[in-house]
Image 1 (cartoon, rainbow, N blue to C red):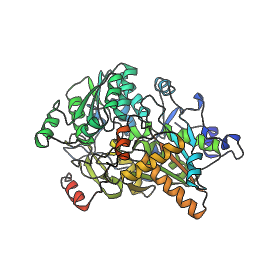
Image 2 (image 1 turned 180 degrees about the vertical axis):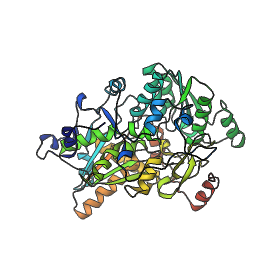
Image 3 (image 1 turned 135 degrees about the horizontal axis):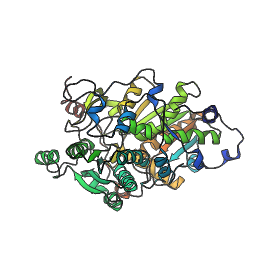
Image 4 (image 1 turned 120 degrees about the vertical axis):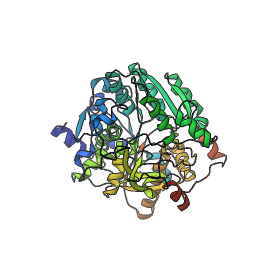
Length: 471
């Protein structure tokens, strides 16, 4: 769906001299919350490679995805429409917390002594404390509309599982979650929050599924991975006609739902009278990064602005910076379609870092494709550096960030310090995709000097890519 000329102009013009430009927070009214999601596929110079059937290696059709997703979401997954209208029933739930604030990090800037202007779009105001409900709510809505009774899913740090549990409660769906074992043990209060919203939660690998039992038989102490948890959730969904599967990142429709972040940020940056020179976001599967970056990428492709857009990932799970761009399974058990993405191999099990939401073996096919086109950059950072950035942010801005967005904060702080050296007045925008109030065990480990920096070696790469599908 096209936007009208007034909306389009509002996204790209600035308001120099606006008194709001001197404040710390930029707010939108309910009627400024987006009415459509943005599909970046419509504006790319080349379409992304299609998913392939795991058996035939031929491009899949809608019928191949029907056992896992309702048709509305399948159509969004393959759509080339630029704008997809947000149903009123979804937008009504969005209005519980949207629009989210854009903050100018004045106190962090002063502490760094930088001429750079740092902005962060804060998604921690949602019921789940992160950006994840932006897609959980529409996924639950479309499944309920299709008559589905239960959704299964995986979760790493627990933010996605929390979001889907909340969304299912809004539409009367049962929710069953497989949480990666490392995070299940590290973050018990995330588990409790999912249960508070009505979900059933299993540690993954679990003895509930055939695939989980097979992993435990070979590795009884496995810390788990998102790939393993996906296999377990898909296995259960595929066996029950009243059950479907929901994914919290990676897929096209998931990233599209998240573009409400970037669409709001465009309006808010205009309110601030600034245009970003650098947009930086953490990346695991890619939903938070794509949600912030894609609307700005549209403006960049149209020649209306020219920001550098940079994805930041863990050094221990460096899919973009060290992974191979090839077709691979989205799960460890090889039950999902083959998608072309930057991957470390579907049976790769990352080290149990505390940024559990970034411990995925592959990167979103859409982000991988955009990276291959040279439209974005990538960086990788170790977790101790990231936690140091998170602590500095908390002590200046008053928000304890989740471990995931500290990766982007580390890069934003580096860039701001570089501006201090050069005198450049660069405008930096990042997405603070969630708060860390349920991640304090990770900060405890940091303060006790118990965190390790896991580097991804050449030997790790060789082992990780040994079992890639042969096409």
